[in-house]
Structure formats: C-alpha cells, structure tokens
Length: 407
Image 1 (cartoon, helix red, strand yellow):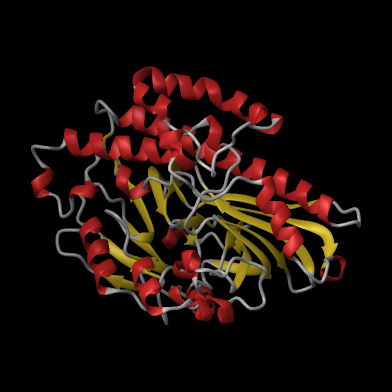
Image 2 (cartoon, rainbow, N blue to C red; image 1 turned 45 degrees about the vertical axis):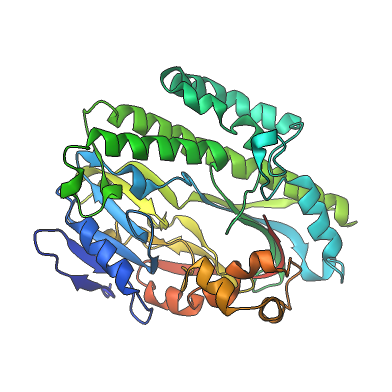
C-alpha cells in the first residue's frame, strides 16, 4: 500500500505523519502539531488527517496515541461528538417537490439551537422529554450517579434534558441522496451540555494538578493526567460515560427524525440495516503495533479494516459513507469531515447571506446570517480531502444533501 503521507521530524519529540497531500495546512495548526509531538508519552507518532486545522490545545484532525497519560483538552469538550447515518427504502421520487414541510417536521421533532438557560428555558432542551428519552436515560443514570457522587457540580448541567437534542454550530440533521438516488438520514451531534461540563471540569483539573509544571508545557492546554494519578481513573470513567451518552443521543434523534419523515411522506418505508453510528471526538484503549495504547481521535474516525464510517462534507457539499482499510500507520483512522479552511469569525466577515443562498440553492435549509459561518466555502475541498486519504478508506456511497437542519 502506498504510504501517501508526509513526515515531519520534531526535535526532542515524536514523528508527525501527515495525510495532507494536495490540502492546505495552516501554519498555526502545523505548530500546534509540533507542540503536541513534544509530549513525552506520545506512542510512535502523531497521525494527521487531511481535514486538519487549529484547535484548542491539540489540532482538530489529529490522532494522538499515548502511553501512560491522557490529555483532556485533546479529547476536548464535545466528548463523543460524531455521526449517525441510516439508509431508507425511499428513493428521490418518493419525496415531495417542496421539501420545506419535511424540514419543518424534523425541526419540530428534535430540539435544536440554544437560548440562555438562566431562566431554565433553553429552546435546545426538552421541556417535557418523551418516553424514548426516559428509556435511554435509564441505561445512563447509574453511571451518571457514580460520576456526580464525586463531582456534584455536574448535577447542575443539562444532562437528561439534552438527551436526544441537536445543539448548535456545525451539528446538523440531513436528508441525503446517494449515487442511486436512495434516501439517507444523516445527523451529527455529541454529548451536549453535560459532555461540555465534564470536559471543562477535567481540563481545569489537569491544569490545576500540573500548576507547578504547567509553565514548562508548550501550551497549558496540553496539561495531562498520568496513569495512576489522582484524577486519571475518574476522567477515563467520565469520558467513557459521555461517549455512551453521545451515542444514545444520536440514536434517539434518529428515531425521532425517521418518525417525522413517516408523518411527512405518504408512502410507507423502512430503515435498512446499513446504519453507522461513529464518534470522531473521543478516546479509547486499542492495540497498535503489538501494544495497548490510549488513542485520542480529535476530529478523526476509526477506520479499522472493513469498518464503516461517515465523512461529511460542508453544508451543501458531498458526504461519504466509507469503509476502513485498516492502515496501521494512521492508527486505523481517517478524517471526520472536510475541515475548516477559515475561522467562523473570518467566514462571517467574508461572506454574505446572498453568498449562502447561492451556495445552498439546491438544499432546503436555513439561509440567514446566523449560519454564514457554516457556508461551504469556509471548509476545505472535500474531494481533495478524500483524495489525500485514499490509502486510509474506500468510498462506499457518495451522498448529496437535499434537506439540512441546523441549530
């Protein structure tokens, strides 16, 4: 198999292997990768995906294998963020010509967006959660109690009320058509408010625990817990729970979106077994190069041989269902999307609502000033991203959006 990656050598650090041929990498992201590679517990090398861009502490689009330590900020605060996709028995001809009704039905079925919750009235949370939320929460409740017995501040988060909700930013729900005009439902979200609180709490704890040594780190957000230290086990338990929460969150949303679709379309349909539910912000213990290591994928997807994954393009661009090739040099990983080409603030300064309307003319979606930061031109070219990782995954399905719901 052709290597397809470039290698950066880091003085007093691990190698950096980059699958970025034909894709621009900002200097700030490159420097952030070099800083992370200097951490003494990196195993073998960092693997960098073609959607790489600047993140907090560690670079989004990087795979960070560690031995004996974990960096909470590398996992981040959107713990367990990921994708879910289901193929239905519907085809394009089964959809109504005007798709606004379907978008509205999905928006009614899944809480999305956010308003200040100081009044306890966040539009992105359930006011009265349905039975499906209760059913999933019952499997999460014991683990949450175990965490909050030690960290009671987490009780004050949106936990139960956010289960089965979308959120904001680049989180979305979409109706897509594949190369055979079959209808797919795809969505993107994570562990919501409670995951954010867990991530923030332990990032702060790591920095506090290292307060005497933090000045020696390339970046204070690279503060870490050593295995066997006071907070290591607590963090691994909490992050594992948040990843489970994120998976349940996507499953509930998918149930509600499919129900909304059935109410909007007269033709009966089924959802097939061709479904994928994968994280792209997470950590787990894996075997690589004959050793047990912790693998943090910060904006990256597991791509073990034969494993299905999802690589979404930007709002209005193509997305892909892929099958992993099990490339060990990448720690069996691939990109989690197109990757931002510019910051949200830069996109809002550069583009207008008219630009957004033109770029998403073929998609039933919001076209207002609040979503300009998600305009397709703010992201890297998804075709270039896919070409750069042809040694990591093969394309199974190519999807194009026809409906998109944003928070």
